[in-house]
Length: 246
Image 1 (cartoon, one colour):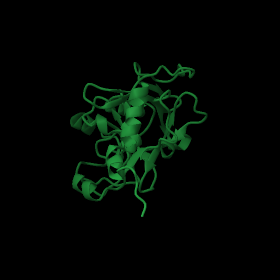
Image 2: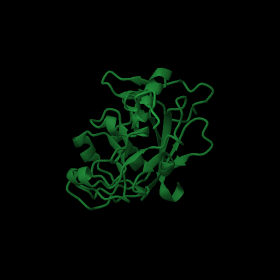
Image 3: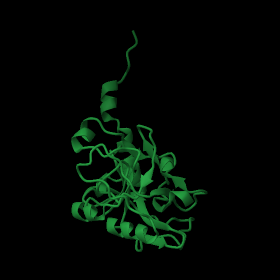
Image 4: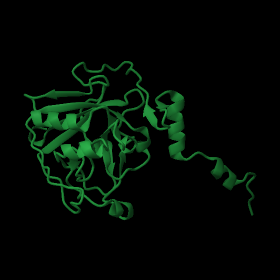
């Protein structure tokens, strides 16, 4: 019989989990900072060697619209914890919303401002869901979403940056919901399921109740660390365009 000269169980207890190790490494490297509320946030590194396109939105002016080109761009930052932690449907949200810590991408843009900008570019909202519209799907014009950052050769669609555990994919519609967004104050800009509060949402998944989501969720989502920016490129630009010209 072979005897090991060390206690394997003790080593396992002492070992950091993959997620804890990753987050510790990011903080130690300066790629991330701990906010006053205890949440992890991306440090703004200034993108050394990578030029931030002057036509892109930035943290100070986080929304830019091109009415003739029918596109809206917003500045956002990756929530580092969602490279390892899954989330039920919280895709892109406002940093001032009550659910800011749940989103994969966080932006200074307010939901009502995104709604108004999309309307100015000619997009038509669905406004077909209520909080009790369980089993129904978001309506509204279909939108093509893409994500870009300095040094990226080609913009990526949502499937390129977000992992969808159930595998149905993404079909984003302009759900509308301006009044609900102002009332609920969750900060939802783009929900990864049909949502009666988010300005835009994924119509391939129905709206479900909180209880159903807790016991049998539609899917689980997280950022893709294999394709998302490294710590020199955490700020991103997310574009919304009509799908027909996406």
